[in-house]
Image (cartoon, rainbow, N blue to C red; front, top):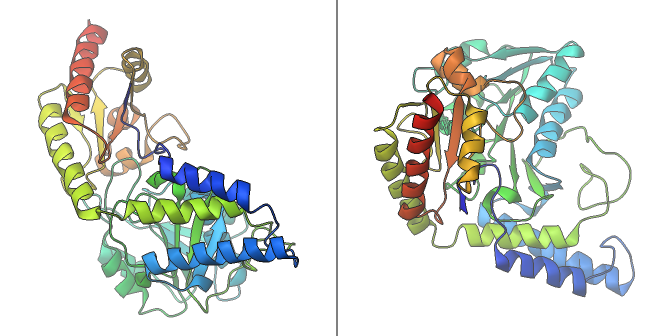
Length: 371
C-alpha cells in the first residue's frame, strides 16, 4: 500500500497511541471533579497544556482545546463576529480557504455581515496592497490560511500581520492546519490560529484554537466547566495528552524531516513534468503538497484506477464541497483544470520507491484511460 494523502490525515504515531492508551487506563477521573482522581487528571492536562505552550512559545491561557480544525475555525470566525458586531460587520478572506472557513462566512452573510475576498497574484499569494485598501473602519476580522490545503500555496503571514496591526480594531485569524508540525510557525503574528492533531501524526478528534491573551470571543458551546470558558464540555484528557505528544514528536529532528520532504517533492516534480498533466502547485508552495490536473480524464476515475494498484491520493480536499476545486480555479481561472485536479501529499515517510511506483501507475492509467 502506498499512501500519498498525508494532508488529508496522517497515520497515528505509535508513541502517540501508547500515550493515549496509558492516559485512558491510568486517569479515569473527570478533570473537573474535586476528589483525588479528578485532581490527578487535571494535573495531567495542565502538564500537557504547559508542554504545548512551551513548544509553540505561547501562554497556557491562550490554548483552547477543540474537536479539530473545523471547530477551531468556526469558533474563531463566529466568535469574533458575534462578540464584536457592535464595531462592524465586515470580514476579509480569500478564495483559497478551507470549507470550514467558507461555511461560517456564508452563515454570517445570512446574518447581515459583509465579506470581501482579496485578489490573488499569479503565484497564488494575496495582493497585499489590495488587502490594505479593503480594510475599513468596520472591518473586524481578516481570516487567511497560512497554507492552502489543496495546492500548498504559502501566504506571507508576517506581511499580512504588519498590515492588520495598523488597524487595532481588526483581528487576524489564521488557519494553520497545514503548517503546524510541517513548518516553523510564529503565533505572535496572529490573534487566533487553528490546527488539528490528525495532520501531524496525532489522534483524530482533537484540535487547538490559539487565542491571544486579552482577546474575547463568543463561545460556540455554552454550559459546563472545562479547561477554558471559551469551550464547554468535559476535557478529553487522553486526547489532550496525545496532541501534546504528537506535537513534540513532530518538531523533533525537524530540519532533517523537512529536508527529506523537499527532496521528495523535487523528485516528484521531475517525474510529473514528463507526464501529460498540468502541475498547479507553484514552485514556492509547501513541499508536502503537489497538485496537478489531468487532461481529458476525470479525477475520480483516475483516483479509483490508482486505488486498484493500492495507491491512495486525493481529488480536492477531503472536506471540499462541489465538483471542482475552488483553489485551483482561483489561480488558473480554468474550469476544466479545476474539475480534474488531484493532490499528492507526501511526508518524511515517503520514499523514492513509492514515488516511482506511483508515477509508473499514473502513466499506465493515463494511457489506458485515454485509449
